Length: 148
Length: 148
Length: 80
Length: 80
Figure 1: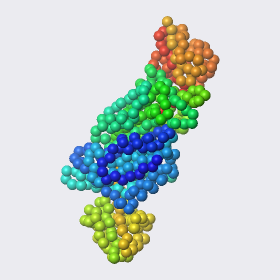
Figure 2: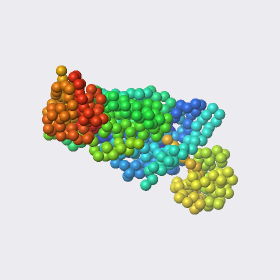
Figure 3: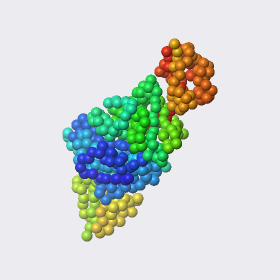
Figure 4: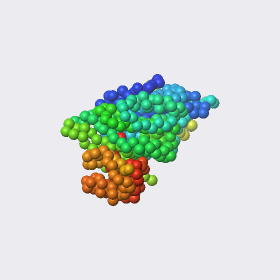
């Protein structure tokens, strides 16, 4: 079961993950990651922008790469766009497999690529103004682990 | 928030993970793994036995090691014992952190140790009889990744 | 007709607009001349990509946008 | 009084029982003699651990179980 989506409104990751699990009967394990807007100091909102002609197609290619690379039964990849408040989910990736290795690695792989190799731009609203956020050096290093 | 449990009756991982997330306000990400009894060929049930004086204490030590090693806000680790039917959850690990790296690695670490270094023994009921299951060579190899 | 240049992420702030029209055809030199010196500076950064008609160019200097094409200027991304 | 020997996992099937009493004190040689040749064979495997009074022995041959102690024989585990 494959479910790749861009959402422009708040969503409930638990509900998505639960129905994703049910849609993959016979699985051995499901690994899921949910990223949320941290309730930091004076951050009042996060805005995710994207480039419509590329973004969803890029996520589909990332899903193709995950299915090629890992032994997966299903993959759920959901990413928010628009303005998101503290505590709200930004991203949810869930992978179902016969064995935990494929499920955990697929989530790790997809998250590393969504962070620094998918067509999203992120800025946060602080009390003074909006500030653009670039990936951290760690994010590039994490992604380079997957280069063969 | 730390929640380490042995359960002798079926449980709902989604509900546990949802309340675990809510119990860690300000988190940046939650990674979760749920392992289930695979609906394989002629397997009608799985039985997890344990050694009461060691098992929960060992899981607490594993949680200590995860908190020492990763940058975590919270850790949920729940393991079933007793007879478990196909499709029922066996294990649920969830880790909350400011950044995804700590959360994903903590789940990976805990699962590798629960598989081959916690005080559980697993056997499956096939049409003929019960069969004991030893960890696979892969499980030992996965765990050795964490040796410093 | 024309080419539409779209500024993504922080480049939108640098350009002061989300998009701009330019005369077709538009090549790399024409793009640099059109977008102003500040955006042009950033375009020369290896981490900034250019897409034309929905495809990311593997060599952005090979840009040749035709009438009706959309050219997207894509600074370093950050998702998740 | 006595020492209780507990057989875990597949060792329970080999021993044909979940537990057995033995006279205290009980050392490694006594344990091997008490449990029968099949279980004794498996106990010599490095992957089989022995716990005494709730603690896993780092050197199982140093076993010295006293009156009232529980000795657990722990074959290779498999959880998750």
